[in-house]
Amino acid sequence: MVTMKTLSNSRGISLVILIVAMTLITILGVSFVSIMASKQKGFLYQIDSYRALNLANAGVEFAIRYAYEETNRPNSSLFTSDPYDSPVYGFHGGTFRYRYDYSEVIGNDSLIVTGNHNGSIRQARVRQFRNYAFENLTLIPGNVPFLFGNNVVIPLVTNINRSNDTTIVVTRIDVSVAFSGGGSPRNLERIYMSITDTNYFQNTVYDYSSGGSGALPLPIPPSQSMSTTPAYSVSVWEDPPANTRSSRVWCALQFESGASLSGVYSITFAFTNGQISIVTFTV
Image 1: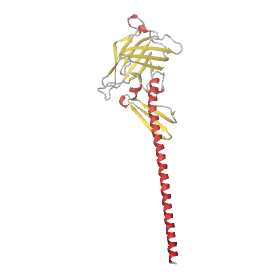
Image 2 (image 1 turned 45 degrees about the vertical axis):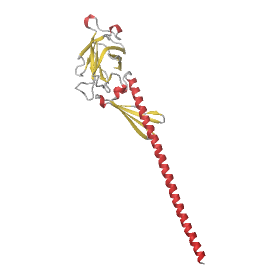
Image 3 (image 1 turned 60 degrees about the vertical axis):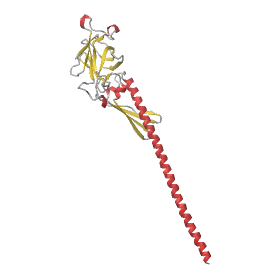
Image 4 (image 1 turned 90 degrees about the vertical axis):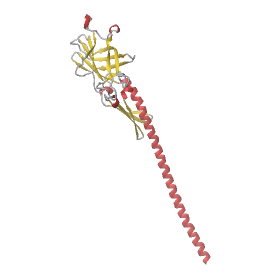
């Protein structure tokens, strides 16, 4: 009798132990699966984040190439808008877009590219963007060329930031225009360069009407596209600035009075270092 009762108690205890053990194993199994699922999700998020960063970096390369090509496109929105917000571009299963914030202080000039992959967002930032992407002289973003009497005024900005290069020297200016519509003769009389917007005619670079030669029809023949005498120096902004020099410069094309000046303009600036900058726009 005692033996049977002892055996029954042992079986009861074993059953309890078995139930407890199975419960613990179930809890551990569920915890393990939950942890693995969480790690898997985190791993996938890390992959998406890494791909989003790659998309942002790819967007930087794209923006630099786009900016370089847009410098020669008439009335590009990259220069007529400030800041410039790009469309959303799809690339390798994700997207990127960028914003270019122009600043005359080249150290504050910036590009921000946002990459997105499956909802993961990463950004890449480039300071002094126009120093990487643009030529020596370009249009000032947000400032389009305009007509001023019988003159076409072109706002320009220098895009160099080097402590050992405080000036860029323009040695030659070539001008060609595809005029629209009819009108009176459109002969070019003078080209001016200035570092102030209060006087667009500060320095006479070319004077085709002096010496009895008369104003020139466009485009300027190569034999008459003279070098500046003396060469015209354009100050370059230093960051931080060593003085109050501005990185802006204005070029004014003066035509004979009464000329209809609407059309597509292309101006090539040549420099002593052998580089050129081409500025194209429509007025």
